[in-house]
Structures are given as structure tokens and as C-alpha cells.
Image (cartoon, rainbow, N blue to C red; front, side):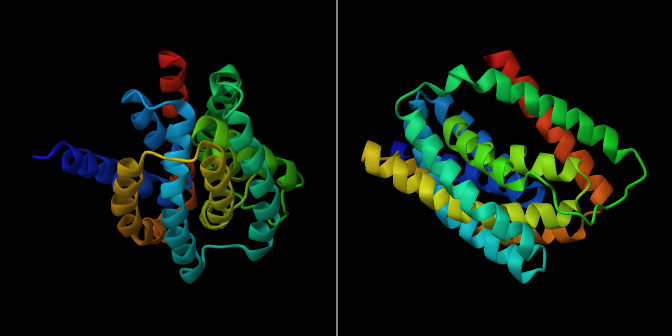
Length: 248
């Protein structure tokens, strides 16, 4: 088999699995995809640029699917978009000048503690919050910055914080996924403007695998109970955080 075709099929499989996780749990597409690219020796900035370029299409399909299934809270969505996009620009620009590994340990620790808190909360009596989170704008700004620098993090940071504060996992995941499209567009445009290129075989493979998985992942979000979703989100964050600690 031609090496380019083999690489394309491999990236398509990665994109399929990553989008199923991200679309249904609201996180981990960028983290899992970027980790795979880095394991192949792709430089961090180029890896993040490639993943976010592919995410332009996958997040568009995912966001539309969540809108159609009624998983999006319009008020939350509107408050996430602009600060998230600004943060995405700052993070993408920063990654091209400052190594992202410098701040990764602090983010990993934050996510580990947040994941453990969500798991604890999943076993408590579930009470959905009706109040909007007070710090959504700085949270979205921070999430956009870390997402670009770490190749992923918008979902783990924004989704985990909002779910931990008591908001319905279904509407948090739907709203965060929908807002992610705009964050990703800004990030990919910034990367491509500064770097001038991306790993195009990886981009194509991630799109081929990720786009078909997006509607099904949105469907899963609608039909999984809030308690079960919280537990899955918490376990995913803890697992990824421990893995990042072990390999750092």
C-alpha cells in the first residue's frame, strides 16, 4: 500500500475516534489528535495548526448537529464565542513564538483536579444549576488560549468547569461544541498566516474520519443521562491528565 494512502487511512481512524469522543463528551479531539501527530515527530506548532485546520469542518458539522438536536443554550453560546475566539488568536500567536511545554504542567494539574471533582459530583445527588456561570468570559478566553497552545483544551477547560459548576452536561457540551467552530476558525487562520503551511495529509485524514462521526456523537449527547455524562467526562479528564504527567 502506498505510504501516503496508509497515512491517510491512519489519520482518518484517529479523526473518527477523536470526534466520537469530542462530540459526545465535549472534549479531547484536539488533545488526542495532537498527541498522535507529536508521536510521529511533527513539531508542536505544525501539529496544532493541522489539527485546528481539520477542526474547522468537524466543528462546523458538530455544532450544526447540536443546534438541530436542541443541545445548545443560546445565551451560553453567545457568551462563549467572542472571548473564545480572542483567546484562540492569542494562543496561536503565542505558540509560534513560545514553547507550549512551559505551561502544560500547570494546565494538566488543573484538569486533573477538575476531573476528580466532576467524578465526585457525579456520585452526589444531581441538581442542575439554572444560573449562568459568573466567569464565562474569562473562562472562554483562557480556554481559547490553552486550546491553541496545547493543541487541544477548549473542551476540557470550558466544558469541565461549566459541568462542575452544576450546569446540564447536555447543554454545556452542545454550546461549547457549537462555539468551538468560531474559535477554531480564528486559530487556524492565525496559524496558516504565520506558518504558511500545515500537515495536509493529516488534515485530510482527520476530516474524512471526523466529519461522519460528528452527527452521531451529537445524538449520543442527547440520550446519555447527565450523571453518566459527568462521570464519563471526569474519567476522561483524569485519564488524559495522568497520561500527560507520565510522558512529560
